[in-house]
Image (tube, rainbow, N blue to C red; front, side, top):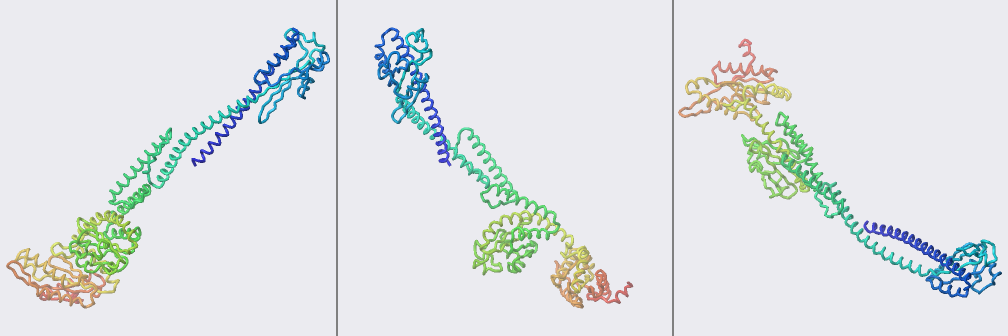
Length: 615
């Protein structure tokens, strides 16, 4: 580009120089011809006047000497006095030099008009002018006194030939000097133009690169070339603007990273990176705003699952919940297979390395670092990796997120781990709040003395429970249990011993039924057991098992050893009635019958019990 500019500039300057030189040469030539013509006229007038004076004074013999002296004038090559026809007829032909010798001289004698001719060759420049003398008075001298001619008639002519070769030589010297001056000037101009163009070209190139870098999100490029002049202001302004913009974008990225707890993977494009982290902040804000309005912890878990599956596109992962009170882990969601961990962690949460240590567990750090991963063979072979992240809820590990992936997915997993942690960090306080709400709710539904569900729990769940039993076409066994002669314990040993008896009865009840069954403190010393999906007619057998266990159980306290019995009333839903509360009432009636007939027994509800009571 710079070379092309210089070539064009050189061509323009050369054309300008040639035009100026042509004008100068033309002007010089015109001036030289004009001067020569004027000089010729002056010489001719001088010769004419002098010869006329010589004639008047009678000293025409001095004519040749005078003409010889005229020839000594620089540039005068030849000067002759030519006689016209009337003078030849009156005074004779004269010498051979006075006879016209070319057409130009004859034409002047015939026309009476001055004529000129310029003969140019490679070696010489000759200018010839012929000026007529006419029969007219000149400075008080009347030509007609001596010449027999008509007024205004041509008497002769002065033929003057001048050699202008020296003028051409002078012009050539001027041209040479002009060319030298031009070439020196052109060289100087070229040098300074080249210097200027080089500087401007470098500046424009750096400026273009800086703008290209800016369009790609990089504002750190520094324009080093100082173009000078007003362009320096442009450079300084641009550099200052880029620096301020870079600083502002970095500040935005740093503040957002501080807010969400992690940063995006930097690509070097500050605009793109800033846009990404602002978008991520918006996504985090939307996520947080949504989960804060979720009432249940289950809903929050659903949002986390959507992030993992829909946003992160994960197809192998596990989300676990830790029960701190019982030190157990339960599965919230698993994708990819039934379970990615051995069942031992569900019985003892400390078997989960992430839960026990409270730090991330990465199988790449050490093969099979966690012995309870379900496929450590694939992990050891390197065909499968896992990454487990503990989530702190209320100061302890409340959840564990496990990512399972193939080796080729490693770059992607490394990229999304900070994002996942960001979302989990936002979810943690919400999960903590929902956990506390669940705890408070559970406490409101549980008896503080025995840890069993209370009557409020029964009232909130019994309708849903009965609907499920009907939908499954199964049977719900209802056991109403009362501690025999419980008031005597309080009266004899005090309420502390009475509380201990109630706790012991609760333990016997819980141990005597399945985990799926429900044990409820119905009120005072009265308990209820709901036997889920029991075989019809088997409820009485379970009740008898509980009664015997209680009968054989010894309750010990400082200085006291007791044995207590219980009475049990049994009914079954929907065997005895298709209304659940009716069946509960039937069990209560059967309990009353057991107590009325001697206690420490199990009584299955019969329709006649209802009639006997007068219902």
